Amino acid sequence: MSTRQDLERGGPKPAQYHYNNYASTHYAEGAEHQWRSWLVPLIVIANVAMFIGVMYVNDCPRNVVGFDRKCFARFLGRFSFQPLGENPLFGPSASTLLKMGALKWDRVVHGHQQWRLVSCMWLHAGLIHLVVNMVSLIFIGIRLEQQFGFVRVGIIYLLSGFGGSILSSLFLRDNISVGASGALFGLLGAMLSELLTNWSIYTNRAAALFTLIIVIAINLAVGILPHVDNFAHIGGFLTGFFLGFILLLRPQYGWVESRLRPAEGRVLSKHKAYQYVYFALALILLVAGFAVGLVMLFRGENGNDHCSWCHYLSCVPTSRWSC
Image 1 (cartoon, rainbow, N blue to C red):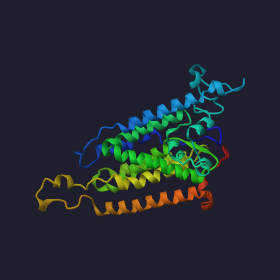
Image 2: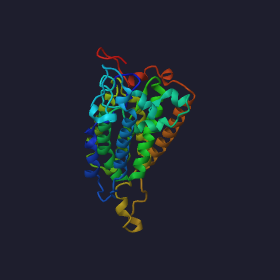
Image 3: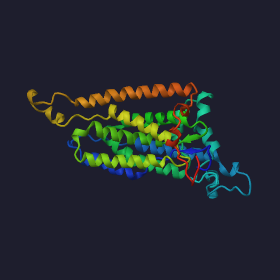
């Protein structure tokens, strides 16, 4: 974005489709139940509806004054976009986003508007921002929902967005932040931990792991550009990564078929021992992370005071741009 006050959470790009296919084509026991995906399309519709509502409230022709500041696509009437010099992503003003629920540290901590930790993930800085995030959500989320159902995917999506908002608030105190990409990175993190915890039941798993790590690394690397909230990405990714170990366990290979065999020929345990270890560690780290993050946030602590180099995770200054 063009100002420090309007910070975009740039979502993962649709390249993640490579991993989405691997789970359905390389799962060693292909007779798994397939769920019908309805939650992800509903989330997409809700985000689009919210963006339309934000643009209606923004009403650029009424609020932009001056011959040198003209709304873009004025034929859209009150739905026209802010001048491109103000918002190059074809969207509303920063003040409208803040009015509609964008994340802002002082509003959350001193204004007692904790709901912004959730509302910000339903807002987008512009049409480009919305399209990139929603296309990514379709590619990532539908496959996960078909495999694991709407309850588990919905929990991962919402908690990852919440976790991303907490980390963003701790480190970015002077900006506002909007976008669903913290939740999207949570789905990516869950895909990674799902592969690791169900490692024994997949074929071609090394190739799938390599591809997924490359996709994640590229998307996180994009977050070091200016005006992109990489702390929301990282917080969402870590939340989803831990939740994947907790919610996306599959039975070990042979357990499903063994239920049809005589008792002496059955696989005794539904899950392997390492899956239970991952589950326990992830649950402890997730609860501890949320507890520490929320306590620090509402005590008004600045995360940068505890980590002098962490600001480089969200923006690395170069000769071409400053942070």
